[in-house]
Length: 410
Image 1 (cartoon, rainbow, N blue to C red):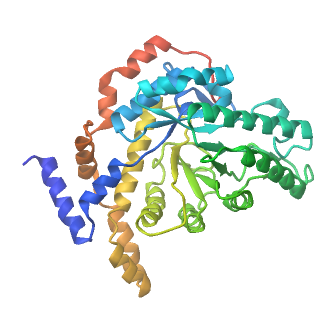
Image 2 (spheres, rainbow, N blue to C red):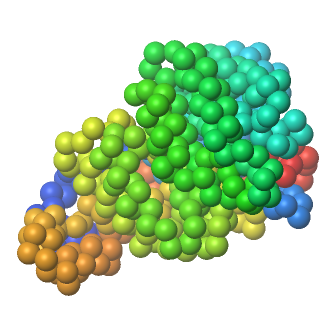
Image 3 (cartoon, rainbow, N blue to C red):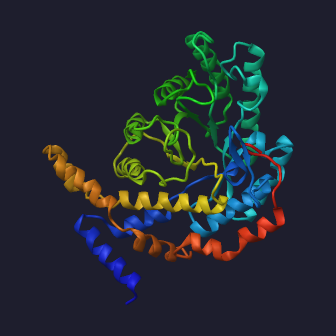
C-alpha cells in the first residue's frame, strides 16, 4: 500500500473514533463551491500606486479564462464575480456573449458588483451624498447592474459603499443613514424574484472618521429593514485586529442574515492577503461555525462563499489556488471536530476539554483526505503544482506582457 494510502486509512480510523463519517465529509468537500473575483486576476496596487505584473488580465475575457484555470485545477471554483465598472466597458452589450463564453470554459458568472466609489462625484459619498443628483446617479448605476445581472443569469447583487467622512462635523450621521435607507429601498424593490442583496461593511478606509456601513450590525439593520432577500456580507479583512469574526458569523447565521463571505486575510487592516496566510486558526474557527450550521437546522439561506483579494507580490493564479486550498483545508478540519465530546464538555463547563476538541481538529493533518477527494474528482492531488507545471502562466505572461487596463490601480 502506498504511503499516501496508509496515511489516509489512519486518518479514517482516527476520525471514526471521533464519530466522523468520512464518506459524508468527502461528499461535502466535493460539493464545496468558492467564487473567485474577476478583479483578483487584474493588476492591483496601494494608495502609493499600481504594481503591474506581466500576464495580469485586462479584459473580462482574460479574467474569466484565468478564473477557469483555478476551477480546472481545484474543481470547486465554478463561478466568477464581476465588477461592472471594470469588466463591462460597453455595458449591456458585453453581456450578450459573456455568459456563453464563460460556459465554454467550464465556469459561470457569479455575483455582480456595482462601483459607486471610484467616480470623482462620489468623493463625499454615493448613496449618502448630500447632493440628491449624486445619490440618484449611484442608484441608477446599481439599477443598471441589476439589468446586467439579469442578462448574465446572476442572482447575487453584492454591495460595498465607501461612503463616510474624514472629519468630525463633516456630515450628519443620522441624515446620511436616512439617505442610505431610501436608496437601498429603491434598489431592493427593483430586484427580480430570486435575486439576493448582500450588504458589505468596513470600519474605515477610504473614509477615516466614520463610514456609513461601518460594521456587521449596521449592515444587519439595513438588511432587516429591507426584507428577506437582503443579507450581510462578511469580508474577513473588514474588521479591527482581534475582532471575533466567528462570533459575528454565528450570530448572523442564527438571525438568518448571513448572506456570504469575502475570503482573504489581514494582519493590520484591509490587507487583502491570501486566505489562511496570517491566521489559519481564525479561518478554521469560522468554518467551525459554518459546519455546525450545516449539521443543525437554522434559518439562514444558502451562503455565498466568495474570495476578495488583490495580489500584488504573488502571481495572480498561484495566489488564488493557494486561497482555495486553504479554504478546503479549513472546511475539512472543521468537519473533524468531535461534536458529541464538545457538547458534553460545554454542558459540564469543562473548558479545557472543550478547547482541546477544537485544537485536536485543527491539528489534524487532512492532506491525505484532500488528496483522495481530488483524485476521486478526477483532479491532480496537488492543484498548485499541477497548474505551475501546465505552463499556462508562462504562456500568458509572454503573450500579454505588462499593460494598462481595468482593475484596482490599473
